[in-house]
Amino acid sequence: MTAICDYGAGNLRSVQNTLDALGVSYELVRDEEGLARASKIILPGVGHFGQMLRSLDELGIREILVRKIRAGVPFLGICLGMQALFEGSEEAPEQRGLAIFPGNVKRFDDSVRVPHMGWDQLTEVKPSKLLSGVSPEAYVYFAHSYYVPTVEQAVATCTYSTSYTAAVELENIFGVQFHPEKSGPIGLTIMHNFMEL
Image 1 (cartoon, rainbow, N blue to C red):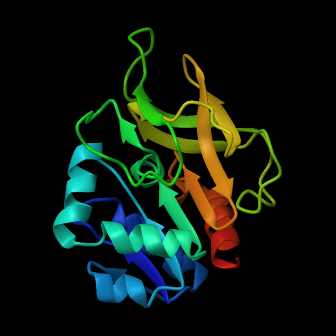
Image 2: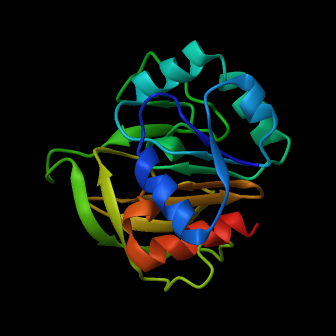
């Protein structure tokens, strides 16, 4: 069963529409029992890092999310859902991330308009199962004020005042800073690739 983690925010309807277009069955999940049954997990995210992580804690699902990821269940974090994979964020310094990957999320500096909104270009830096069939310099849709610096797990980057991680991939763990559910045919390809894992 594919679980879309519903923590009370996030871009759920657009993600659901994308999976519907692919003919994929899924469940919206808000509890430990639902996540325990999941064979794939999608964590969409919009909003505030601290609020998201607090919501996961209030629902009592942080620990099972981490356990499922570490057990090898395919996981896709979208936007804030990717940022949650790291140890923390400048957006909420007091709030601990899932800490699957080391490192912290940064805020764009004042040299550029924030948030970074709209279509921008990827630069593929490593072969990627998630980005299979996608042009190495494809344009996808972004909406964010905070970013993950370029990390070892990055398979694609983007540049907006600085080069930063646009997609991560390590074994069963996948994350994208952009919104595949708002990125047209390219986004459908990416979501299809995740579902075919």
